[in-house]
Image (cartoon, rainbow, N blue to C red; front, top):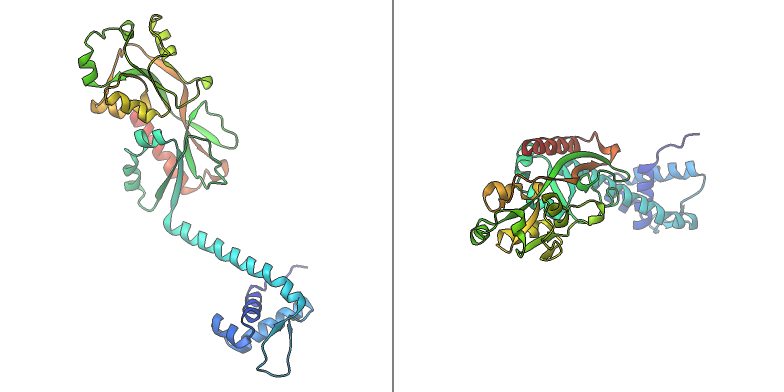
Length: 305
């Protein structure tokens, strides 16, 4: 037999027990004392047991029964959870917050310079960036969508290829002006190399050794130079004139276009085995805010290409 819904009666009972009075409960819930009494009696009839010890005097305080006292903490916890859930629904529908997980470098070098365009298209959606180098739990951390760098396989997530990468050396115009003898890859001997250690090499992340091998250069010591574990900082070191960095095309695109960096030996191209992917949970794929952000990312990636 299906149980009837007694939310109003439970609310009346909880308030009466907490305030020890039908009148006080009525004032709190904005109904009459008679309505509170009727709700409580109806709940008692359905349960088949009294919830309060009745006193002869109408002015005596209400005293819950032992069984009622045991049940009250769970009932109050249930109302607290309902209130929290309703609050989240209200806040979520009003704010339209979209939580996006990206690496700090991708946020700084690619996403943030472009995000204003998304805000203009979707002013009702507030983007919250979760920047982390470590994989995040989309469910536990409330992530809606993300951009990850790798081979395209992450358990529990749909992964769609967003951006491919080329690997090439870059330096600042000022550094290049001071090193006019740099005419070919062979001239990198004794030049300051800047290494990007932000991704482990064992998953196919291209290194100076890989690029020099592609260029047919064996006399340059690929292990020497400045080592940095953040792609943004790698490029900044090159911009500041500390040497030649091995750049990733997605990260360096805006700096090269703006003239802050110069691509060296453009005739040489090394394709990365890794790429950027849009990732999200399959069960969330149809949510409007995720559909909108995914489409915007794909559009921007096409424009970059």
